[in-house]
Image (cartoon, rainbow, N blue to C red; front, side, top):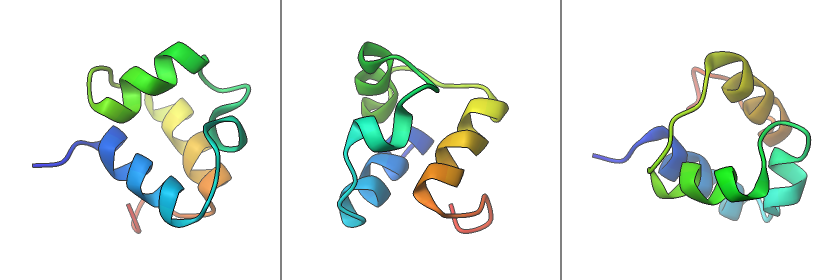
Length: 61
């Protein structure tokens, strides 16, 4: 089963976005790598900010 970070990683790549474009000002670069690999989870407010940057809704996730 894929976790949220891995799913967001795939969406980010499919949209051709960089980590900086998606995560800047939300989470640190080192945390970003751990999040996308599934090693760390994030809070709901940060998740929604990331989804906004990806231009997707929580329902689409």
